[in-house]
Image 1 (cartoon, rainbow, N blue to C red):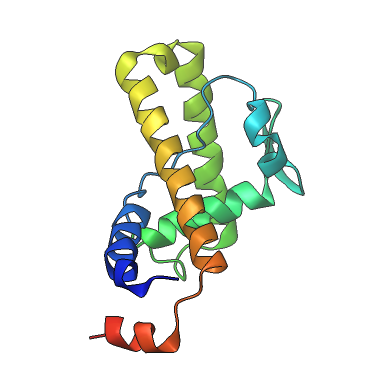
Image 2 (cartoon, rainbow, N blue to C red; image 1 turned 45 degrees about the vertical axis):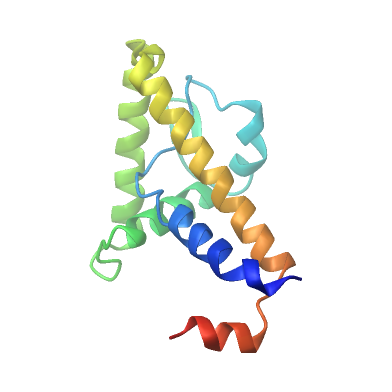
Length: 141
């Protein structure tokens, strides 16, 4: 790998990875899209009006809360699950009112998807191209 491009790439990747701070299920209709079906499979921890919330969804929401500086020790798993249920209820209500079709909402959802996919690409790149110890030390200035 050509290391002269690594520093600007790592700086850009870190900047992009830190952009997604909004908790969102990313769903735009009352049912989960086919693209997220795999992510929604697993142990169902709650069902909200027929929509399953899985452990993986709860884990992602918990990670988002932590990235926003939420006190994870103060919020037990049940409290976090209750927050997620409330978010799902609000999501369903907004979909039933057609708010998911408003241009600003569509744009926000598209940006959330873009950010999440860019973050996944960054993680994949970093896992596929490990940084050498020498370069890591030079970046820890």
